[in-house]
Every structure is written in C-alpha cells, then in structure tokens.
Length: 72
Image (cartoon, rainbow, N blue to C red; front, side, top):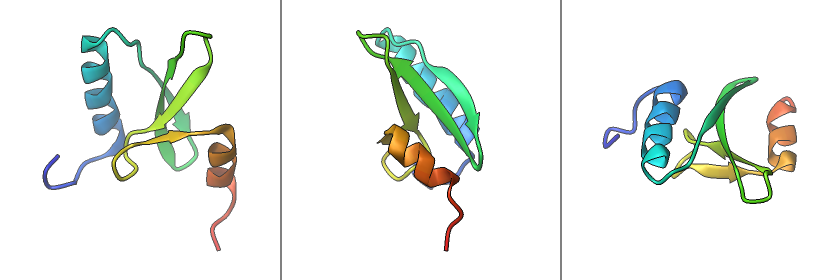
C-alpha cells in the first residue's frame, strides 16, 4: 500500500477485510474499466465505493454514469 501499486480487485479485498472487522458486509461488482465495492446503509441503499481511486472515493449514480462516458 505504501508503494501505491496493486490492482483494484486486491485493494477491494483488503477494504472488504477491514470493513468486515467493523461489521460491514461488502459486495463486489464489475464495472466497465473498474472493480467497485458497495455496502448498504441503514435504509438498505447502496453506497458505492471505488477503492482504487486516490484515497478511496464514494461514488454517486452520476459519478458512475460519468465513468461510462468516453474520455476526451
């Protein structure tokens, strides 16, 4: 982690292991060009997380839509 190298799946698994220690169940999902994780909040709504983004990032539906658009 200190070298900031790795692959998204490995980092997501590490995130899931840490989250499990605090009682969160992490789910995984493929996304074009990304491997994302999500947890459900107390309202049973998904909180989508990109573990590989610098510092980790919580994504909104709009963020996910932007990831699908071709980059210019």
